[in-house]
Amino acid sequence: MNTLALAVSPTGTVLLVLCGAAAGLLAGAVLARRHVAVGGVGDSVEKATFRTLHTASLAAPPLRAGLTPDTARKAVRRLRPLLGSSALLLTDTDRVLAWGGSGEHHTDEVMQHARDVLGSGRAGVFTVDCAQEDCPVRAGVVVPLSVDQDLRGTLAAFGPEKSDALARATEEVARWVSVQLELAELDRARTSLIEAELRALRAQISPHFIYNSLAAIASFVRTDPERARGLLLEFAEFTRYSFRRHGDFTTLAEELRSIEQYLELERARFGTRLEVTLQIAPEVLPVALPFLCLQPLVENAVKHGLEGSARGSHIALTAEDEGSFARVVIEDNGIGMDPDRLRRILHGDGGPSSGIGLCNVDDRLRQVYGDEHGLVIETGVGAGMKVTVRIPKYRSGVHPAPR
Image: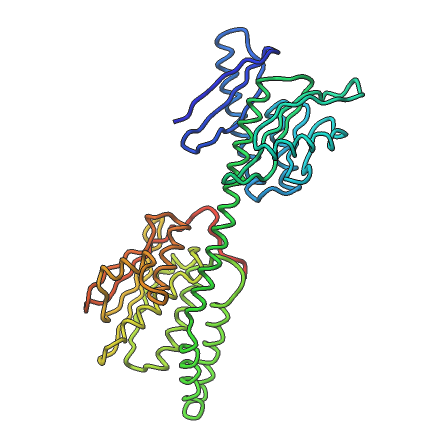
């Protein structure tokens, strides 16, 4: 639920504070000239609400990159007109990062107030001594900025005199800034988690696979040199793609090309024991998806399809167009898995080496697209396994890395 609060300042202005309870933060504060007519107030509030949300939307992206001199400068430029203060500044725990407006000659004095606030952890209202008669920085409020109760800096607003309205507004905007900094921390944690998961997936390309692939290539050197040469090129391209260092996302076409290279190397090892069917709709080839999202699923299908099977294995990979989604299905006729064991694996309880591919792919799909886009797996003991992935064709922030 959203709430709206109005406070009238001593100068006859209306202070508008828009609060979003669902987000747990206040979107900001705007000073708008109060109309005498009742109808005029309504119009002013509507305009002020729009200005508040628009200003917040412009100030948020810099802060989502963290608190630096550059991001602080951009945020202060957006937020100072919103508060209508003579000066607005952001500090970290050591220095002023950005100062907007008048009175920058008070930097040392204001920074000392900021240190006092950081020491107490509570907002403070201060007066400023100045010999310059025309200086509009005479009083203001300094509010701490925190992430998970860890103080990261302060937001300070100053004007020609003490103002309860400005103090309240500054506190609310400081809370909003703190939330943006917390979201920046979550973004960095998410990026680190994705990088760690990619490292884990790359580690899954085991030394056994590399050794076995090279051994299979070597077996054709004398009997079929051309095939040995082709397999060696496939191996080089497969490893280049799997260990590349740039980009969290790729295209379905690139991922499928890597899968074809992997399957070609496995067919060189197992011969007729491994049968593969691919059915790919051309419309879905440009769809972006998380890097190394499908290859671990195919590797899992090959492993469980051949495990304990004397008659060989059939792997079927289908990619279909479903309107705003691409639907990818990977199916094998192998030994399958007990559903309870699969459930433990997907919850990370299957042991250090059990189902790392399935678990990591499921986690990354949920992180990028939401819980409704996790893996859908149908299996049973002796019944093979069918894994379905539904990938949105368009999702904000999901773009393949340039080659």
